[in-house]
Amino acid sequence: MARALPKLLASDAAGIAAAAALLRDGGLVAFPTETVYGLGADATDDRAVARIFAAKGRPSFNPLIVHAASAEALQPLVQWNAWAEALANAFWPGPLSLVLPRSADCPVSALASAGLPTLAIRVPAHPVARRLFEAAGLPIAGPSANRSNALSPTAPAHVAESLGEAVDAILDGGVCAVGLESTVVDLSGARPLLLREGGLTREALLEHLPNLGEPQRGAKIAGPGMLAKHYAPDCPLRLNATSVRPGEALLAFGPDAPAAEQVLNLSARGDLVEAAANLFRHLHALNALRPAGIAAMPIPEAGLGRAINDRLRRAAA
Ligand code: TXA
Ligand code: MG
Image 1 (cartoon, rainbow, N blue to C red):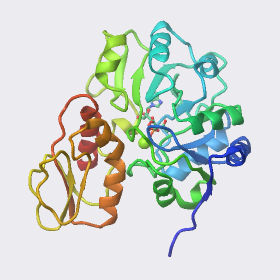
Image 2 (spheres, rainbow, N blue to C red; image 1 turned 30 degrees about the horizontal axis):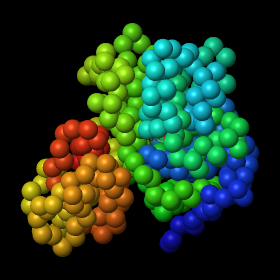
Image 3 (cartoon, rainbow, N blue to C red; image 1 turned 135 degrees about the vertical axis):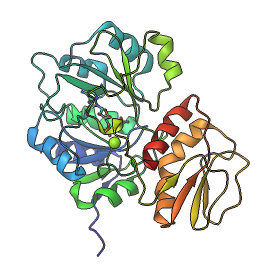
């Protein structure tokens, strides 16, 4: 039986006002960002935040990113510091989330940060998201708008497919330009740590944070972005493929893709920005063909290629 579809709201003034009203009423609204679609709720409302976990089927110990239209709107929620100031000046609005200690009187639901003393915050660059946050006048908790462990959504149809009626409305902002989740940096400790590679490259971060480190292996980080298996299609995914086996669909990259019956190229000209923007959309489309498997061609391990390879490795795990 086909699942009932959530309401699609246009990104005009009426659509944004309707979406903001739903958020203020404790509803769930999927919103566009330049990285992926988020599943938004009032971050200060425990019940609304709990509905996010229920809709995603997400283990409740995985904390959420809290969004707003400006750094000024987020600063009272956390203990802001000099690293945060430098990164926000350089990269916000944009595909970067900062983990900072919660402020003493932080109004955000403890469930949103999964009981941790820290909070992840982000100002996205998508104009529709920023207008929505301004209209709602609230900090908005928002994980990617997909069921837990499934592919991330980079278009409204992906959200509708994955979450169906579990979401009250989808605000239509078109296809996501970056197409990879935000880069997550932990600024709450003695040294900044790169928790998740994403839409902002490590190279760009290093220019402003030369002492950036990596979490130690086995360190206790309870996040889905840290799980070995995540972002997975329904069939096996084979990495570094240079040829296609019977029944497989090909996720190609670059001009020299082998011939295949079912093939989508992340970037025929080998451009990593274009490949990142296409990654989840192409995985969704190949997955929908129900192949026996997906063969993914090698992607260079540099710039956005690092985050693309991270997502592909988790999808293959
Ligand atoms: O691009 C994105 O980041 C999208 C858009 C909607 O903003 N959001 C997103 O959220 O990808 P989600 O929930 O799928 O991933 C959030 C990541 C997870 O890896 C989570 O563990 C980590 O951020 N995270 C959130 N709060 C944290 C915290 N307090 N400490 C450490 N990691 C945290
Ligand atoms: Mg996610």
